[in-house]
Length: 381
Ligand SMILES: Cc1cc2nc3c(=O)[nH]c(=O)nc-3n(C[C@H](O)[C@H](O)[C@H](O)COP(=O)(O)OP(=O)(O)OC[C@H]3O[C@@H](n4cnc5c(N)ncnc54)[C@H](O)[C@@H]3O)c2cc1C
Image (cartoon, rainbow, N blue to C red; front, side):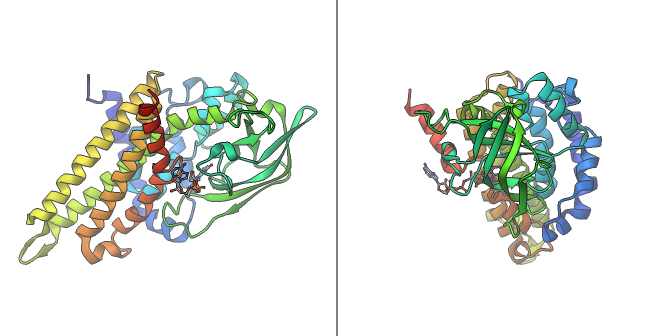
């Protein structure tokens, strides 16, 4: 077992760190406060090859693996989770096309993502179907060579900025198995009948675009079907087995960034005539933060490593995402505590990390759903 990153992986980490440290601090607070999506930053990051790092090189990607994407994700989220989310989610849906798309679909939908010409989204959640993915009702009805889509999707990342979406739709409502009723259809935003309405005033990751999507008789050709009809539920479960590893890396990045800020503050702030870092209670907090982060990172790296070996492990992915999410929330909370009153106000960035951290325990499967996946795998043996 080798726990060291390769030279190439270390170089990727350095490049991501340099880019984030150079570009994020100038705009992070403004994008958070004004809920501003930084399109220019997206273009810059794409030009430097940070997008599609794990998209095959024949489609313009980096041809690397999930681990390399985790490394970049962690570095971006470490410097600012809001901007990190904008950049790591810009290709959200690419794995669906890569896993199940035809060669033609890959050429058409993956290549523009790697250059930053297009941003993608994945639309699963609906107002009445969140954790219960099989309850999705957005309907795609066959009409000649087209599908006609009606329904709406909730909380969709990149909703008002993406060029296209992987949308899970009900195609076979009468199928006796509720897991065989759905299909994944690629919907371009310029299709007639499509509308996106931005959702404002989020708790955190406020630079990231989130919207409700509406489909009113949206007509798309049947060639936009990704994978097989009736397999949409299973395709998305496999998709999440991979993308949730990156969500784990987001949590590790938040926790690492928050801990570094806490250490800096503890060394530089004095009370009772001595640095905060000289108090044992503060030292213990730092030790606990560092240990949790290391454990979370190891879980995330192992899950990514296995996915790269084509042995993606649903239970391990769920463990990585749940534990990294809890680590992010706990570490960010302790970072605020170490900053005292200064942690509670906007001039110190830890309050933003604290708000941003919570999303890791909610999206792409809540922490409760992750625990169901883990326990089901153990108890069904
Ligand atoms: C900022 C943001 C971005 C998002 N981006 C996207 C996106 O790009 N695409 C997309 O499709 N969705 C997206 N989502 C939606 C997100 O994935 C869902 O919010 C999440 O899956 C939970 O669904 P829900 O909100 O309907 O909560 P619910 O499913 O109603 O859950 C509410 C609570 O009940 C618990 N619960 C539910 N079922 C069970 C059970 N069986 N056992 C135990 N506890 C249970 C949950 O864990 C949770 O605590 C986003 C959400 C946010 C906030």
